[in-house]
Length: 241
Ligand code: IPE
Ligand code: IPE
Ligand code: MG
Image 1: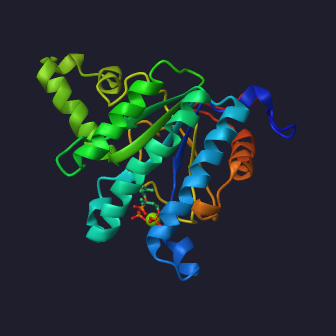
Image 2 (image 1 turned 90 degrees about the vertical axis):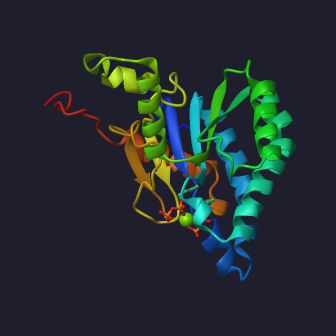
């Protein structure tokens, strides 16, 4: 159910989320950083339930960036294993809720084969669902996605005048993914960190101080409330001006 303080008519169709602050959450509790990642699972699930409450159709979450390989090997290993086990633990529940799970990012040699297998299994199991599409940006970089799109265009042999914004959009990892209406970043950092660079041209950005493991659907509702207070102009002028 849509909370009464939100307007049903202006629910974002697609929400993007930079799930940041796991390490700091753990450090504040004198725990290893990896415990912060583990605590992020509850936040992710509650956010999915929040999107289902609001009838949001698309949720894209940043789980691992192309730059996150720079972290210590133990943390990278943890994140790989953790994402694999999360998929295994949660895919039935997500499937029952009508969630279609998809991945965005590079399937390169650094991603362990066992992780790729779980990703494929989750995608396959949930492929027929349409209530909510949960895209996990994993080994994802916005610049890498644009490079990969341009490579696809070159392979397809498009002529210079056929290279349009539409052509680039169609060669991104998922041609059917709408641009996000709202992008939320937690943990009080005011940056994009290479998330969906092409798609966020006109997204509304909401930065919140909450650390990701503390994030719950109430925070999501608050971000949507802020979004509903914004006037989107797309370079034009506001309605009624
Ligand atoms: C986000 O939390 C999770 C990933 C990047 C995988 P961080 O691990 O970046 O947490 P902070 O920013 O160090 O607190
Ligand atoms: C962005 O967070 C990536 C993910 C949330 C997966 P980072 O913690 O990696 O970003 P920076 O390094 O603070 O910019
Ligand atoms: Mg971070």
